[in-house]
Structures are given as structure tokens and as C-alpha cells.
Image (cartoon, rainbow, N blue to C red; front, side, top):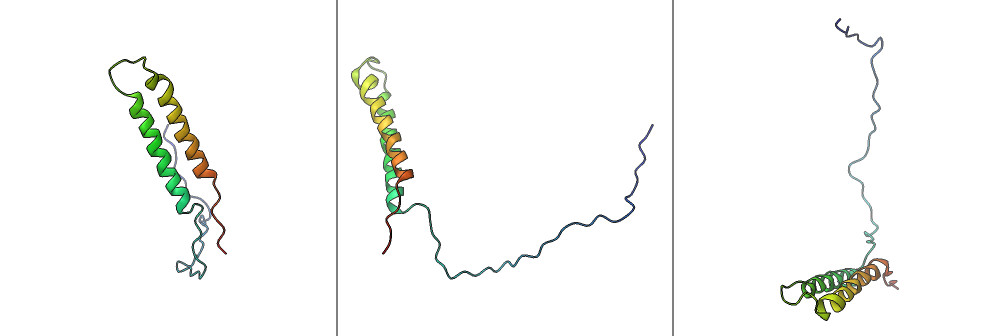
Length: 93
């Protein structure tokens, strides 16, 4: 049994919207983060990477550097990343 293809009784209307492609705005673009936030975020990524470098290596896997210091450095880098995200930009006067 083959299905029978039927056409709709009335044509289907689609909604079309006209938007102006040339929207002009005189107000400056406001970013969420400022330069200080991005600096802190980059510094935090470097600190996390340094912590992983401290953790790597093949000699003496039970050293204090790999077990204690490196995880603290990595967690400090993540904490600095949170500070970079939540820090409010300075108000311009």
C-alpha cells in the first residue's frame, strides 16, 4: 500500500520579518571584562600550567613538590581565574 501525497487546500504562509541591516548606534560598545580582567585570566592560566609542569616528570613520584606544592599551585591558579571572572571593572569617571 503506497501512501498518497496530497497538497494542502490553501497555500501555507510563512512569517517574514523585515529587519534593517544597517543599524547605526552612536553609543560605544561596552565589554563585560576590562583589560585587568584579561590580564588576571592569562596569569591564572600560566599559573595552572606551571603547576602541571611541577607535577610532571619521571623521577621520584613521591616528592613533596609533586604531592603537595604542585596541587596547591594549580588550585591557586584556578582561584585566581575565579577572581579574574568575578572582578568588577573599574568605574570610569
